[in-house]
Length: 252
Image (tube, rainbow, N blue to C red):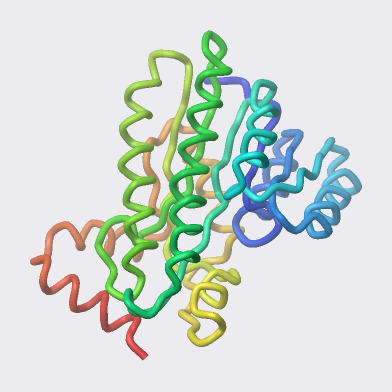
């Protein structure tokens, strides 16, 4: 078991990332909180230091910016646990969604996660550490209406499971977390406020189960019994049937 003392969390200004920050502080981790919204980060850091007596550092960064990404990577050598949570989704027909915005999504969901994981691994050679990459149940099936988002999360799932096997003999624990619908602002942002899906789990439940599973050495975790059934079932039912069902979920 790796002795974890300090965590860096991306996308820490809201949702699952914010809850990771609080839960890790409860468990005795110092935190480095990364996001674009510095006022939110500062408020969260202040609350952590006040309520838990744990050092927390806000770090403003846009992880689609190469210079910001490099600056964040310079903090990784002293980090025992890296949580790549930053990401966003877009809901809509492929031909209707803005190309530049979709490229930002690819750069954040895939590019930044890959880069930070790579830099973390390189700077911790001989030391080891922990990585939790946040994917989605959308990683388990192509999703019409969220085609690019689901594809980015499929990368996160495949990449994380592969390097988990590669790196375990070198002192690294890598886990991929695949939440289903969660009560956060995600779908409001993804749809521009036009669509809301019911949140079956609170972010607190998702995070607690994720950290408990990480401590047990799990490689891949799907949060929630129903979501596990969906993720497993998507690989068992005929592809055409699964695609039609996924499409109906996102049609207006």
